[in-house]
Amino acid sequence: MPKHCLTGEEFSQAELLSLLNLADTLRAEKIRNGGVSTRKDLAGRTLITLFEKPSLRTHVSFTVAIQELGGYAVESYSSNRKQEEPEDIARVLAGYGHLIMLRTFEQKTVERMAAHSPIPVINGLSDTHHPCQVFADLLTLKQKLGSLKGATLAYVGDGNNILHSLLLLCPFLGVNVHYACPPGFLPDAEITRRAKSRAAEGGGSIQYFVNAKDACQGAHAIYTDVWTSMGFEKEEAAREAAFAGFQVNSDLYSVAAPNASLMHCMPMVKGKEISEEMAAHPNAVFFRQSENRLHAQKALMLSLGVQ
Image 1 (cartoon, rainbow, N blue to C red):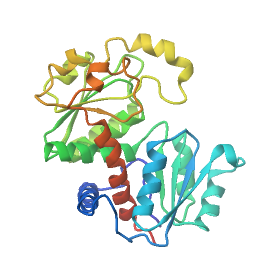
Image 2: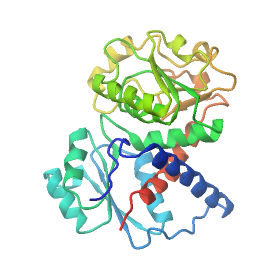
Image 3: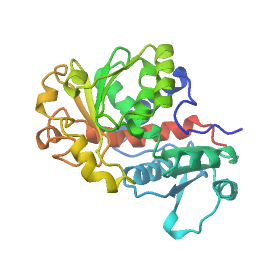
């Protein structure tokens, strides 16, 4: 059976650390070669990318990643294809390529596809999980701090797919995650339960704070995301009212550890979830995170045992 990446929970601690180390190696190799990749690990292999949501970072980073490993990318948008069952799509695409990456709405879509796919399926984003982003985030934290164990990451904002993946993956590698979300916007209870079990195994911890400033106390990094994710636009006005007091700004940053990193998966709405001042702060690592999507996803594809 192929190895899939649907939530990131498919990987052991050793496998995740190996993935991050490989991603760092790939980045260093490219820098040494003047920004040019000469690897051919996936020469002759084809990555098929499926998009049911708009995409910049996921689209470009996966396309460049497979090309820099010697392979090819073919993309398909939901607006340009007929409605089909995920199971049938997976079996059709397996006849054409070697990997599938899906950016979708419902988590069950990627799960149904993976259950019937003879080739690896990667969750490029769903409403419930975003493991590829958090692989890049972990890589960024490792680069900035040197070690993940004992680091404290504070997340302020919506209990969305980003927070779900941060909770599931970061404490599993020894990171302490503090999170603050408004009432009614907390992360999924079952995912939180699983994450706490994994944290106990991995040596990290998870703590919820009612007050955003309390969550940021002593944090080595502060992370936020948009208050209104794709698919929730009708709730925008209500969400902005609910998230008052949950903006990452200088007041929150003042209680973090010295030189704490500011993180955002992007795109950001400056002046909403993050102040203009913090968006331009010298300790903001947003663009390192976005670049690391490329390196982490190259490492991910190499870790899935593509035939």
